[in-house]
Image 1 (cartoon, rainbow, N blue to C red):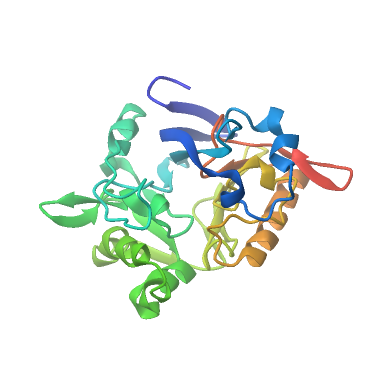
Image 2: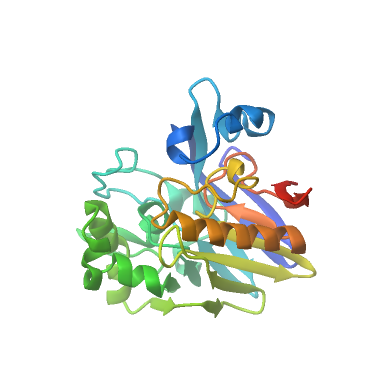
Length: 296
């Protein structure tokens, strides 16, 4: 990784640019993935430390990152981080955050007006924040020429018709109003459900559980494959234990079903797995061993 926290690789003819805002210890391991059997973190210590887990503090290392995907002559962003100046009282780490994703994108050769598509894998505050920015006291789309692809189930669940996630968390209303509603008002939102073909190499698929509309983006090009899995995975420990969901999953059982299905396909079809928050290289390979899923 370069000093600007930008790195590139190819999937067939598709270029992927990883733009990292920060990577640091985040939550206690047993809080983030509460249902893991005792001792799993220590059993996988050589694999997890230091890129994914800090044994000394028992905290999971996570990254906040956006993926730039250049496919079929277009520039696609996968998730947009936290954004700046957002009221997020439920998460002190993100409350009134001041990051520099636009600057990092610029150093990766991406200007806001050149972005053609924004994919939000789901509507959580750390995935939609830079959808918009503040212009003279109003939130407006950050990428004015882009089509924003939003899972319809999430747009309903977190939107006003469902009282912003059922009024369970104030952050859900704030996130929708500053990072999603302005995209709708600008006429840039496309809602989709089930599957959505972005182009001949990129396809979105529903993978519900983490949120009602949680999704993955599949890449198939030149005989190579990858899948951006959003928050289906928060840590490599969930690969051998796909039944264990994070504390942020709204429907843990459904999330586990989606996770197992996506990971089994990745193992069978040799898809590179690209989660939203992995530290280290940011990617993982999955294979089968004795009937179980393991890191490749």
